[in-house]
Image (cartoon, rainbow over all chains, first blue to last red; front, side, top):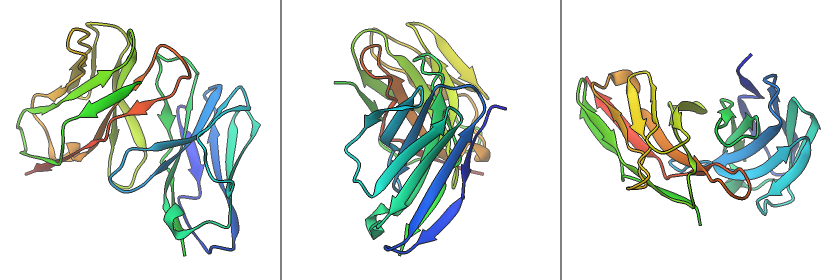
Length: 113
Length: 113
């Protein structure tokens, strides 16, 4: 299995809702990442988990809450989002060696109404 | 700091034309270099990579050579197809510090039949 699987593919949520994005990989990678991508822009790093511990938080607002239940799963919990949070959310994984690069999922297209 | 600069887009070519997308980087030592491709509505796919000077990465007819003397990693393809229409991102992982993928701004490529 050489894929990163993200669910759901599309999500529409109101500003008072709570929802979660899910990401799964079975490549034995020890690092997992959340990115946010706005239209016509490169992905922006949000969080990094290495060996199941949060190692990087790029000053992301607390309405985004990551969780890594085990080495294969990564969640992003969403609460009280704003319309400007609408974007493509990408999950990625890597073996945490700089020569390998990251494997990305196909993303969740989030719309906040 | 570490950064990647790509040629401004969008780029529009006719089918079977020769493609070059320029990429230069700023980083200490010998970072690992990558090209990612993003097709409409999808996540990022690793296209090719190079991890040391003079390495040539290649995949699907695309090539890029790691040039330390010019700090460049230009993407080339001899004969493009309509199916190559996508956004291309040059990226690096530095040798020091956190293993964060640093992206260029992306180049949108459109191939006309």
